[in-house]
Amino acid sequence: MMKDFVLFSVLVVLLATLSGCAQIAQGAVATTATPADPADLAEAYTIDITADDFVDVVDNPWFPLIPGTQWVYEAELEDGEIERIELEILHETHEVNGVSATILHDSVFVDGELVEETFDWYAQDKDGNVWYLGEDVDNYEIGVPDKVTLVSIHLVYNGVR
Image: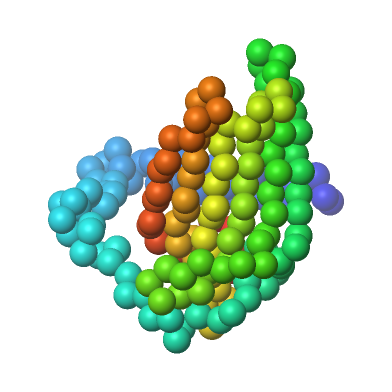
């Protein structure tokens, strides 16, 4: 009985697939969205950040950023060097466009030498969505920092993106 059900299910999926292919072959046109003008994209993705729309803590169950939390990751790179990444949620905050952002401090070491230090800024809105608000990065070459600051806004919401 189960074998018949599985065979029937496979047959239905196969027929549906072939039916769709046949329609395209008979002249139906499969359409996709055409790329927009970059100026239109910039306008479409302009986000108005209002500090009153955000809360003081990032406690989203998919991406909780609780001050004092620490993680350490270590792996051997292809060339045999050991990379160590230390992450810590700081108690301090950083203001971005009036929004108080939680700071994720990220330090990357290769064979014990600091090669990158990043301060990532995240905030959570009243709906529980977590926003990435930018970062302040130091990349180190021979112990000397090369400063890069990126301020951008990307949405990381209640699901996985």
